[in-house]
Length: 601
Image (cartoon, rainbow, N blue to C red; front, side, top):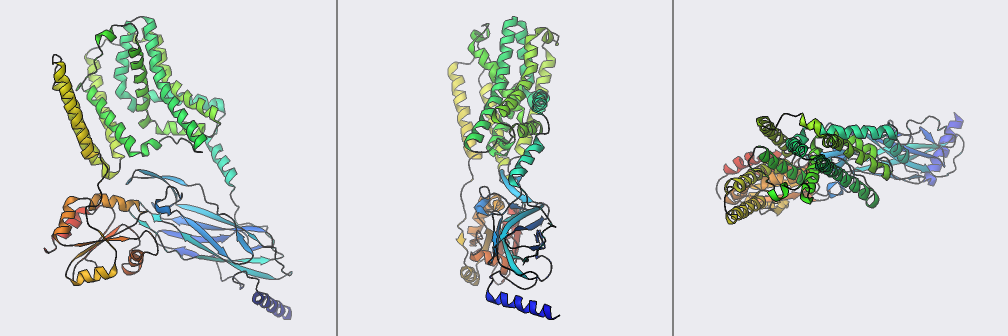
């Protein structure tokens, strides 16, 4: 008993003497836990006790509600609102760089952007080292550790920047600490990257190249390639009627076109790895709204070709030649187009093949990509080298025309699927432009007959091209700027305006909030809403919550008790509370109805 009293007194003396180890009292129970409606965060120590001069760590565990995420990358996070952990401690505990998990890819449907995020359950490790302090046997001191957490917490419809409290735990430092029962192990980034690569590479190189060849062969049965199959079959049939040397030459040109497409992919992979230190992720092109729009419009044009709205006539001077550069270029271009059209339907196959290839050295990766192209080209090389196989096909006739027109409908289905993948704000505009473009194509082919003069043909083509350009400028141009005279958030201005019997419309937004941008485009870029705001003499307030210390951020959390943005509020004279509150990205009709009910100024 007396020994315990002496030990306790000595510990208090050491504490007051200034070990500077934070809190020197005994731990107050289990690890601190932060709980909100969408995330639970807890902290865990690696060892129960640590020795002076040793290394240890704490783990911060995150458990997010479904469909919520933190931004992972500072480069892709809007406004650099990626998840940050700031460990703080006094004295002997010195922290190293935090170890974050491998981020996940997230495609934001509202903006069409690819982001890196942390979601579901994940852990961030905070390694630290303990100073070589002197502690007598049987004695211990405690170092308090605080971990600050910052970052935007987002879902598909809103974002927040929560004001998290610090996680707090206390590390026991004792000279006789066993440190033989770790609760967790620290990940090794280098080994984890190697393990990730190993997961991708479960086959030997020879077998993997064989699978790449099979993947290339499978591209020929993808629905996205069907639109060009009638053209390919007709071309092969026509070639079979010629001499064998021409048939083989044109067939090889078609195969060269396919290989040229995959050579472009291999070249892009080399450039990205050498100059930018990254890899070509198959499928990234479908995260580009521009690429999706171009592909959808191309498929619509090809559908018109299948329906016979227009034809591509080859001059007789070229068609009559046994071989020409134009014929070779045409076959090669058709092969290149067939390879491009295979991409929308081959995401799963090519993504696996590219994942394997990019875990290998560049020469082997390049070979694997080209083997995929060779697999797609092989059937055409065999058919063109054996014209007798093609001659067994039924003679060209009505069946070929029905087959070609049927493929046109499949083509339109694929185009609709690509348009459906566009951000909501762009889908309708692309559909309008597709109709205008279809009219221009029909105009070029139908308004001038075969016997029309060259002047008439060129005049119609110029008018159609001009109409297409105008339609593109109207429907595909970037959205215009604000058409509402927004005022910056000012509590006094809002109070004085309401006192003057004037309504107030306030939108809470943030620069890092992607959903806020979508809400702006869908709601506040509408001309009828802007006109109503002006007609009803409504004061429009833009409440910027980009940073924590902004007045609007404080008002959002502490005055209006809203967890995140985007949020819009309508205030009417005589009431302190908002008359209407809208959350989310599309409430334009409800806002218009509320504005119409306001009295005239």
